[in-house]
Length: 134
Image 1 (cartoon, rainbow, N blue to C red):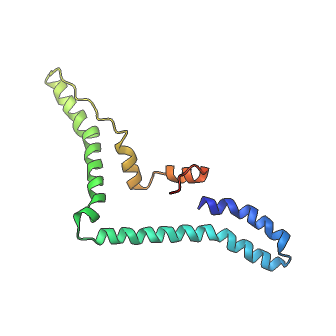
Image 2 (image 1 turned 180 degrees about the horizontal axis):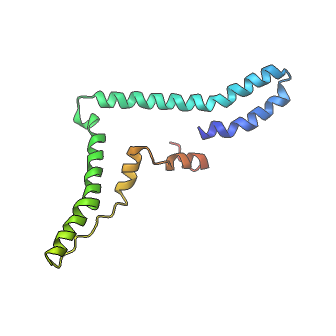
Image 3 (image 1 turned 30 degrees about the vertical axis):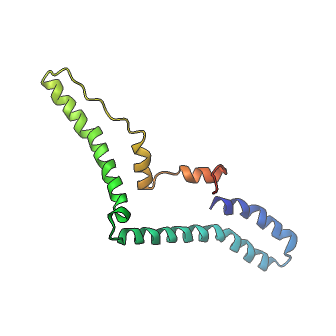
């Protein structure tokens, strides 16, 4: 979407030089400015169709990877924020000289945030023009 948005200003500026009819110029400017939004919506609709096809699959390897990844993240978060602190508390009450360390969540949180739709790093890369193309 960023590519289209970045081009809207310069292209509409060119309309002043080449199109003399004010109504036609405004219509073209409007068409150009809505192009990025339409393209983005088309991409989202296409992704929704892919998601529907994956979810409808009877194969656990196609339809089951998202729920499995989600449950792994849920179990990791539960272990880190509920089970481990509670276990350490019980061990301290029993005066056992053992401490269970928390698991580093550096690798799991990006997966969880990506699944939840909060990972905007790809969008940022595209906006800055540093993304790789095939």
